[in-house]
Image (cartoon, rainbow, N blue to C red):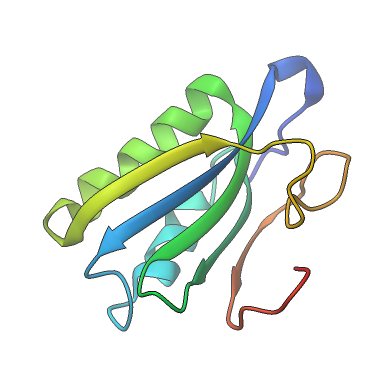
Length: 112
């Protein structure tokens, strides 16, 4: 069961961008599968420059464990991983409340 992150868990919201062989190889589906059963919310999508971008929200330890699981699963495909906090003015940060669920975005749309 996918437990929803709660504010009392000390939620963190981060952008995570992964570079390497991450498009056209089922990477987004693998990320969504790893998210199942974990207390992490957000989305993953392909970027025009060839990377994969994720918006993630979870308690700090859960966020770290989720990212580590992705790295362990596809270490040979990953060339780089950039984690950065979501700033207040980020246009794509999503709703102001907690994120719910985890999804794969198939198109990069402005303002989303």
